[in-house]
Length: 295
Image 1 (spheres, rainbow, N blue to C red):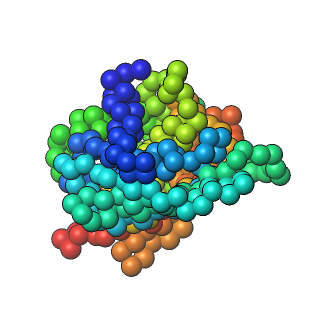
Image 2 (image 1 turned 30 degrees about the vertical axis):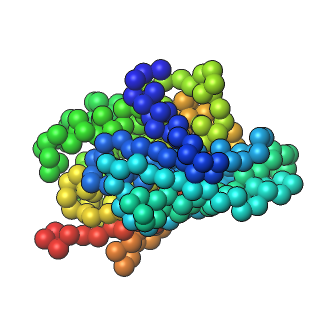
C-alpha cells in the first residue's frame, strides 16, 4: 500500500469523541472548499460505526448544505433512527463552525437471498489499455487557468487510479457531444488485513463517486469545468444504492450520463460495474452548473 492510499484511509478513520459523535480532518482541496466525496464518505463511516454487526449499507441519500472549510475539523453527529429485524436507519449531520454543512441518511440491511436481475454492462475497453492520469493530464496544461492544475489533480487523486475511456471534459471544450462519460477506477494499492472490510470498500467507492459524475453534464455543452473556468459548479445532493459485493481495490467501470440540465442545475446518473459485469452501485446527483457571465 502506497503512502497516498494510506493517507486516504487515515482520512476515513474518524476519531470517536462520544458514543455517536465523531470528528474528521480534511485533505488539501483543489478548490476552497471540502471535496464533497470526502464529507460523504466520512459521514457514511460515522454511520457504519453505530450499526449492528452483519449489516451493510444498501442506500444513502445526502444534501450538501454549505461549502466545507478544508482548514477546520468536521464533527459528525449520528442519530440512531431505527434498528429493525432486517434494516437499520441512521441520520448523520456534519458540522463546522457551529453550522451544518452536510446531511446524510443511510439504510443498512442484513444480507439475504432474493430475486436477481440487472442491466447488462455497457461496452468499454480494458482499463490497462487506457492512459493513466499521469499520461493524460499534462497534455491539457495550456487549457487550465492555472498551469499547476495537473500536478494538483494528480496529488489530490493519487490514492485512486482513475482512467478516462474518452477525453475528459477539459479536453473537449467547445465541442458539445453526447452527455455520457465512462471512467475505470480502483484504489492505488490493495486493501488487506484489518482494512479488507466490506464497509471500507463501500466508503471508498462513495469517496470516488463524486469525482467525475457531473462530467456528463459538461460534455453535453462542450464545457471544461472549474479547472478551465467556463463553469461554476458544486454538488447539491447525492444518492447511492449498493446492489452487489465489490472491491474498491479492483477495477470498477463508472458509466455516467446526464438526462437533463436547466435552471443552473444539472442531473447526472451513474452505474458502477465490477469488471466481470455485475452491477454493483447506482448513483444519482444534481449539482449547480452555472456559466460565468463573462463566458
